[in-house]
Image (cartoon, rainbow, N blue to C red; front, side, top):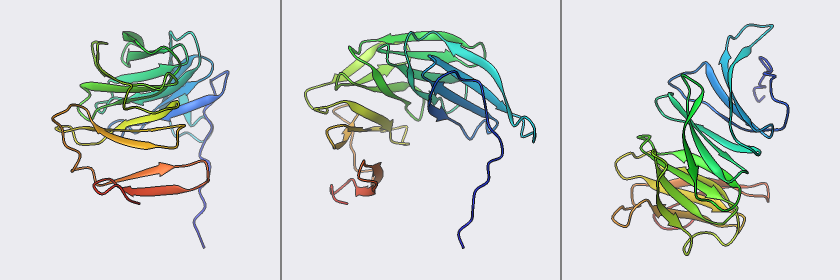
Length: 210
């Protein structure tokens, strides 16, 4: 028999659809949730039977739905992307925006930190992928070799010395690219991609087969 998972608790605080959640192993009692109520909530898990988690603070500033949220590997900062076309970098200690990233012409659908937290990548309905530094400066904008439809998800490989960007889009494509012309992709061997046909495909990146 397969094991069944049980619900330990429910976290209530948003006034709209919850669009994304983020966690980090460095702080196992912290959860971030993004919502269509235009906010990100920072939760602290108490693991109490009657109140499993409490909202510590709400991160507000976006003027439209918050579509994605990510936590830096050190647990000190959060990154959010919104349908208002911007990204925001948040200081989780104070709950304030430290940087606002402006450059996309349409909704931002996905955001991610690099493993060393020094780079940020974003994907948008404008069909572009942008690579930023943490000061809010766009270093590269990938358009000509990007997707022909909305970019639905972007991620960095876990290698901090030679990071690779993986993206997928509504054009049914998964793309793997180096974050600079001098980077190599041969250290990224496998990736998993989910599709609307209810399948998860495992790709061998080095030879481009599944």
